[in-house]
Image 1 (spheres, helix red, strand yellow):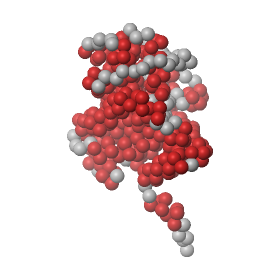
Image 2 (cartoon, helix red, strand yellow):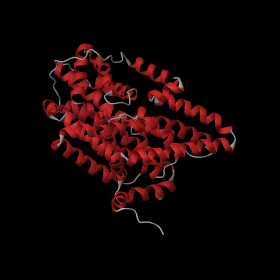
Image 3 (tube, helix red, strand yellow):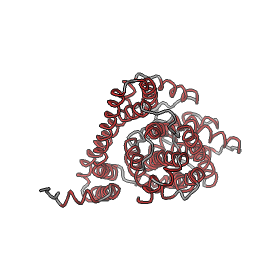
Image 4 (cartoon, helix red, strand yellow):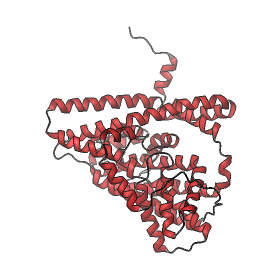
Length: 418
């Protein structure tokens, strides 16, 4: 006779993961307010959760992409090309929104602190060189350092080479990718505890008192990100799928954006996004490539950060700029954002590059970077949430636009249920 699981286990199984995460957030806030000493200890769970995601993500990407390409059948549809266009167009639109907002609500900074320990890239060529050298990086080093451009390059090369391998070899690689996916699902089940630890430690150690002096700048930054998430991205998705985009938008924000907000790393959120794509029944041969690629080049939030902080420096110094220079700033921010590191604070190091367009010295630009680190708790969390949720959103939109059957049946059914 089958034994009935305990009540606690049944409650967990019957409660959605998003609801569990929200409960974890509330528990973390309460812990930070009433037992701050325990909150710092709880932060260990958050660190372990992020560490587990970062550890499993590179292996997952390598095996999934290799298995998808090796098992690709001639004539199968993929949506990578339109996705690349969506990624770049979306990032440029985000930078343009940030330029308009910065002109409409100009921010002025009090530049007094410097951070001489950080060395930003010198120009666009340096950013692009870094990307190119990442492609030819040693595969073991790429896995150890979480270099997803290098991992993708090796996975694609291996997948193409193994397309002519025997069925037994292909089955082995597919089974390995499924095994790692199963480990990922186990890690994601720990998200409520991990999020609770991250929230508790953040509130206990940082608080938000230091952010009050930069309230105006934060409102412009986060306002731009919210506008892109709720207006610009839905318009782009509507253009692709020709129907109400908001059920899909809200689902991606809820199931990807919330986790990304607290992990503050697009790379760490790759397993979460892949699990969501699987839930949406998207083609694995598409999302196995598009999600890690999006974590590297789809950086609307980074483009907003680079643009708003650079424009704040411009307004602070009283530099006059015209429309042509503003458009150039949007282009530079788009290209720079594609080269931003997928770790917390990665976009801030590209601010001096954008500031150089206006003749702003590196010393002053580094002071702006220091301001970025002060507001980094909210800025980077919001940025990552926008970046990561958009990866799934655009992947789903491209798949819906390419495959009418997927559009009408599987994917829409999952979105409506959510």
